[in-house]
Image (cartoon, rainbow, N blue to C red; front, side, top):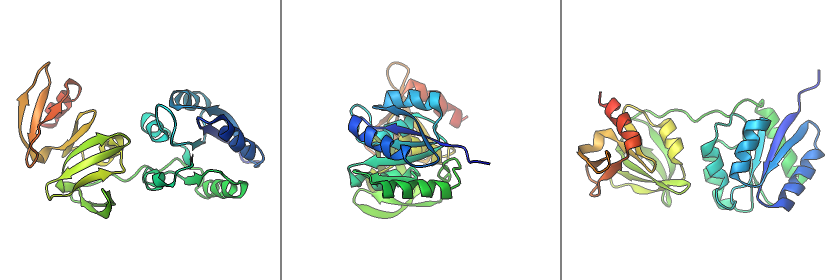
Length: 242
């Protein structure tokens, strides 16, 4: 029995780039391009309505990036990034991208990428393993690649597509992980998102004060500036402490 066609969605703000890629995909047996999108909003709609198995995703697009799209959808298929910039490779593979293609894409390189997809069994993208409080995570912090002790993290703040962490042992810097990735992997019994741009280690709480408009602010040990707890996340923090 013939294998079902792999449904592909091409997301790129450049029309000619979409045309070139869809043309190459059309010549590869077993692939069906079911749609195209030029930005994140249209891509979200296409994912919901077309149900692709794989997304060929540009990173640098006006308004929102390819990484923003990954954060906003619950996509269980494969993601292959297609970009003219090699500096995003580490970030791409940290979110379990199947491949990272540099423009201009050649037919040979594209076929190799799809071969990798076949070898992976077309199974849903495996989510990164949850972290325990005593774990160490091998990652890049600032300009250094190091083992990061999870229980030393005091505060995580959003910095665009990435995050900035502050630890109680003096380690601090930009990390190529999103707030969503941290929230999904960190142990909920110790870490709590208190604002759209802040996750705190509850072991590091010194005290909490009422703030204006039914919000709060929390003072963390070793950090001078209080962190605002928005109304949206205040209940979550209260539930955590019973």
